[in-house]
Image 1 (cartoon, rainbow, N blue to C red):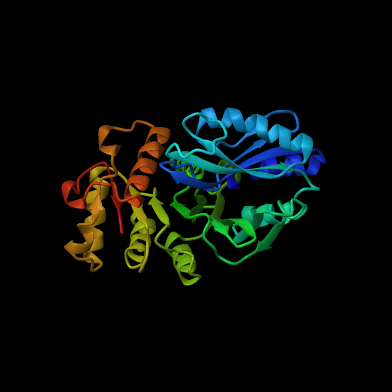
Image 2 (cartoon, one colour):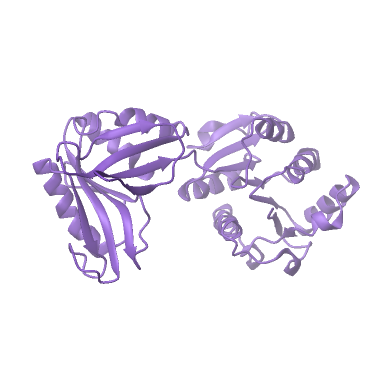
Length: 339
C-alpha cells in the first residue's frame, strides 16, 4: 500500500468510493508480494500492481464490484487461471477485496501521515469473521509486526506493517546526485543529500529528497549518534575533494553497521583516496573491501547511466549477489565498499 498512498488519499478526500485488492497469503508455489495492493479508482483507473497480469484483470472486476456493493470478502485465486479456485493447483493466493472510501476507512489519513513522515505504523484488518459487519474493521498501532495473515479461532487478521524506509545518503550536490536520488527513490529508499555549499544544495534541484547543508563528516556523525545508520543504509560519495571526502570516509569506515558505501572518481582520484586513507590508519584488510560497482567499469557516460549502475551494484550487494572485493582493482573508475 505504501506505493499508492497518494492515490488512496485522493479517493478518500473525494468522498467517492473505489475498490481495493490486497494480497494477504500465498499458498503453494505462489510468490506474490504479501501486502501488494491494487486500487481501482471511482473513475475506473488503476493504481498499484500485484505482479500477475491475468489475476489483475479478474481483480479489477472484483474491486469494482466491491465499490458498488460495499461487500468485503476474502477470496482465493489461482495464479494459473487468474480465476477464483477452491482446488489446490499448486499456485494459489488469498486476496482481500474491499471498498475504499472515507466511510470505509476513516482512520486512513492518520496512517498515510505516518507512512509519509517515515514513522512506523501497523494496520490490523479483519479479513474474515462469521459476522460480516466485523470484516474490514481496522486497528492502528505503532508496534512493530511482521506483515502476514494471522489466523485466530474466530477471525483472520491481515497485519500490514510499514517500517521507515531504508536510507540512501548521497554526499555531493550535483547532477549525479540528482539522477541517483531519483533512482534510489524508485527502489523504495528515503534519500538525503548533503553538501556543505549552500549554493549547490538547492532543494529545488532534488525533488523528493531531504537536502542538508552541512559538512559531510559532521552530518554523518550526527546521524550515527542518533542511531539512524544501520545495515540497510547506503552511502554514496560524489565529491572528489579530499577535504570533504576523507573525513567522511574515515567516519563511514568506522561505523559498526552500514549496508553499502560507494565513492565515485577517476583512477587518479582512487589512488589518492587510498593513500590518504592508509595514512589515516586504515590497514589493507579494511581497504581490500573496496570493489568496483558492477557495470561501472563497462563505461557509464552520463549521470543517468551512472545512477543505474550504482543502483544495480547497491541492490546486488544488499541481496548478497555482488562480486567479491578481491576480484576488483583499486585503480578502476569508481569504487564501492560493501560492509
